[in-house]
Image (cartoon, rainbow, N blue to C red):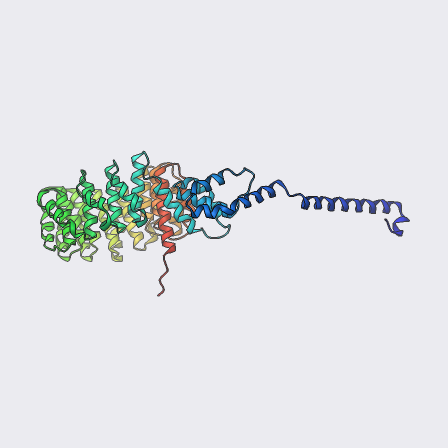
Length: 469
């Protein structure tokens, strides 16, 4: 009906009738929508109904069933957060981290920090899924990351690595078992002391010596008595760690033997053992006629960590070989003495760009950010190895400019700079996780594995409780 006022005006009456009709149409449409749910709503309801038994399947370890259920959803269906979460974790459990990776942005709450409880198992899955890759360099990259992390939960994989056809994989696996604190329980590691490859035998001796596995002493004594090469030196070192302090004399004497490889092994061991009486031997070794031995001596002085190493390292900075100068520059930074900055500043003009990169790393380690511009310039060098060295140098600082350069290097055209940048990002503090997530999608497998390793370092650091003063 229309009111009396409208009745006196035909045009008003027609407008009022039209308004009523439109209102009725709108209300009818709304009622129809409420009465009949859309296809999307129906699909969502169906998905929700299917979610009920997923937790039980996950608890029972039936991860393939959960993944199959998730992948069978219609394309227009919207899975619940619970289904997404369980599908994500199931893929990770099955070693299919690369399939789980696209699900992470859908699980992460927008505007909130990255979820470390999701990223940590994802990153580990991306590494461990590659330990049996057909390509040797990929397996080496995976075991290198595991050796750096030393995670006890990867023990079965590390034992398996000692049976790998690759010598480098076996050596990395032995090193990882030692770092994970599993040497005492590892029968495979004890057998690796008889491996056909010297580098694997040495890695096993180092791990067994660090863990002081006393039952291995007879075998170590035998190696020290029968071997004449570097292996005997590492057997002496393991015995020294097990309490036979007289072995230090044999190691010290070996630092002056005619065989250069034996001298290098002895010098390296003395640097790690850090016995005060060894400083004089290491200092003298920077004058060795063999440049490789001089480089070993410079590195050992940095590992030794004594201020008494400054004088011999200063001598090594003037060595004719760039390799020796570069190692000496790195060792000066590791000593942590700010008064060494003038020596390192002089090396920023060295003819060798590699030496400049080592000097920049040490200066950054000592808190001198004035070399950031030079490091950024090295990161643009045409030589990919120089760009890689620049990435390593920038790992010594968490400056925003360094982070920006590393982010650019992670998009380099060559894999080496990208790999070095991914490795460096694991050592920095700051907002690096979003950058590393992009590295997980790199076209090169080794870069992806390295980025996953750095992500694990970041999640472990973030989970570590902060110490209060």
